[in-house]
Amino acid sequence: MKNKKYYSLWVLTLALLATFISCEEDGDVRDGIRDVNFKATAKNRNITEGGTITFIDSSTNVTSRLWTFTEGSIPTSDQATVDVDYLTGQSLNAEGVLPGYLTSLSVTHDDGTVEEGEFLVRVYNKVNVDFEAEDTEVIIGASTTFTPVVENLRSLFEEARAEDGLEWTFEGGTPATSNAENPTVTYNTLGTYRVTLTAHRESPLSEATKTVEGFITVTEPVPLVPDAAVELEDETISISFNGDFEPVTGQEAFIEVKVNGVNFAVESLSVDATDQGFLNIKLQDAIYQDDDITVSLLPGSNIVAMDTRTPETFTDLPVESFKEQFLISEGQFEEALDFDWIKLPQNATIDGITEVLLVDPPTGEPTGVVPSGKVINLALNRNGGATQGNANAQTATAEVNLVAGQNYVIKFKRYMTANSPNILFRFNNQGGANQLSFNAMAGDPNLVDRWLESEFKFTALATHAGKFNIVSAWAAYADFYIDDIVIESDEARP
Image 1: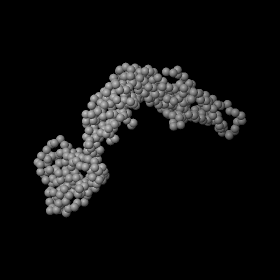
Image 2: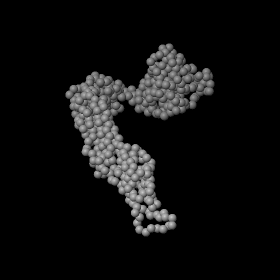
Image 3: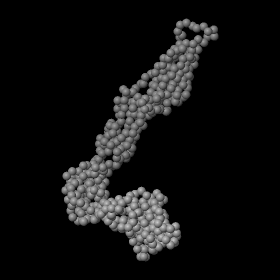
């Protein structure tokens, strides 16, 4: 720690203007200067909380005196010399000034004259010290940066601030000590190590130290391996890792990509611009949704992570193909229909009206298929009327805009009872050739009274865009339940 200079902070001498007042009964005023003197002093007006100030009244011809001490250990005193403790400190305000506590003295001289004076004493809070580290668990050979969390470190006076400072001690670290505010320390040996920080304020003097045992843990490096590989919408293959990479150039020869078992030429390999934990691969040729794609990292590359690790080689890591998805409705049917799905007007009499209900899912034969929460129930002709209508449910917010001529698949979970109707999928409630019909095959006893996963493949028309509808086709009374609807692209290699 730096050599400490203990500043004796000014002895305050208050020489206040005296008011001469005659107290004689006959009212005579004596000419000349009275032989009285008012003199109050304090040994240090600036101390650290918990410290003591000695106040001395050297006034002459004193009959009585009264000291008053704001926030002092005693509120008043009539003694010529008095020690006062100050247990409550203050911190610098927004202007960098330490507020003060008022001290006053009133002296009555033997001629009846009363003289008064007041001044401020400043009580600075003690230095408070803590610290943080960028990483408290580091790989052997790696570094971490420390940050002090210190309060009340700045001395009150400019000439003393050169002695204010920090002293770090890093067990097992390089460097072992530092006076920097934010030192970066390297650890080259496995183990757990303590860290100590001492903060010193020169004026008024205060010093605090904090030591944390086992604050830093030094471990063996974790292998740098891929987490997953996915195809992005622009046909980029993106591989996520458990670490961030330095920029990569000229390493394409160490990446091997197989598409349906055939090696495809790699056009580029780079670190993702927004997340350095991803390596991005672009191929020279196009890839398709139904392709079986794997990627391998060959030995000998110069790819390196920011923490100096190198990725372990891997072989035939599967790549998840990109699927464009619309109308992801999982968990959508948990509120009222008019929030998520709109029941459109019916084309049926009141007796034969079809209901669109939001209900808890029915249970049946276990199949492992479980809907997510509430489901839509299309109930035909529940009232048994002679005229039957169809029920239409439409998304309240989402539009599905498909590309004409491209292939798609509608996937959903469904539960039907015997005689359930066909289900019609429409866009903007357009019928005829624009609607897609799903045959529920309710006559098959193996398909009723249980939850199943179903899908319907189709090639989009120009009219397959806009609000997506579910319609139950006219039929005898039956219940049909549907949930977790999604439309995906269904691209295939030509």
